[in-house]
Image (cartoon, rainbow, N blue to C red; front, side, top):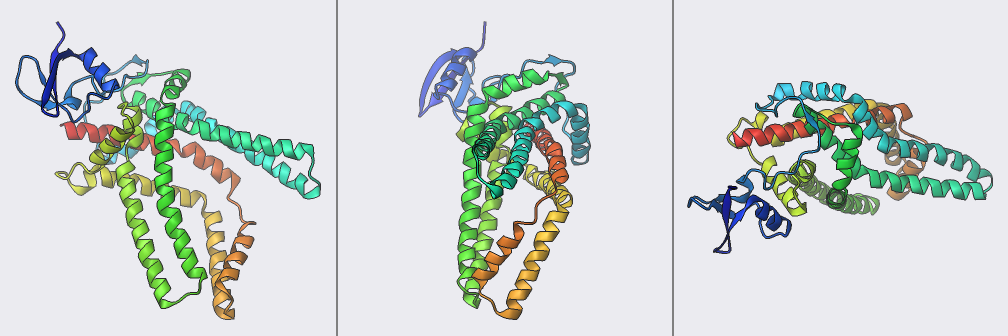
Length: 365
């Protein structure tokens, strides 16, 4: 006979109900992870998310070759294991990368041909090429959630010692597309709003004529922007993992992501999920800077020269900004470095999946 449970909502008890019924109630939104539940034969109340199999996402169909991870991954072992998993599944990760890289390469190639032809004389061929670039851009946007989900599923399978085919990964990833797409748009809008608006205000202050008051106000706005973006990073750190690996809906993914990121207060700071996540992002950012150093150094050098020229000649800040953006059009990132960056990007996703699995396990222990 299957286990039966009672659930308490707003002081009222409902049940008894078996696990299948609880799952139906969860789908209908009648059971939440924070609801109190108890077994029919006991009076001890626990949280609903503690019921095995209730809020856990069904695992992708795969052949299990080894048991699930049973011991936490140390901070020192996290990065080596990231590279081990990336190496073992390189061609599958490369296949996921090509989902985004393929349309991007098509866009760049056709855009370059269109640019050279449009300077001579616009034609039907040019219009078709522009439409093709638009289609490739839209296709890339559509495939981003599948790419993100595929990284989560593939890495979790490797971490659990499972074997899963590439087409099984895609089949599972498509099922999560609506949820991941919505969460991705929500996260990007939040980041975009708190970056674009402050930068726009700072730019307006600078172009309006530098003064001691405007400089001070710009620094205050910049400090607020950095603080808010940092808070967003903490709250959104594990949204991908909870949405895919735990099968959580949007509010639940964000809530549990925030809770996990802020957990581990009893651990040394370097073992807490937050600081390990910051360390991973810092390493990735350093790698991107190295790969794009030529592009970054040229932009920085142009900015310094424009600033020096403006200070010496006393030119208008608005004209200086226009001159900078005009000159910056001729500086483009390295094509090879961009491709290499895309190929290595799964390392970031793998590291965060391992950190998520390890942090969950550590918290349970």
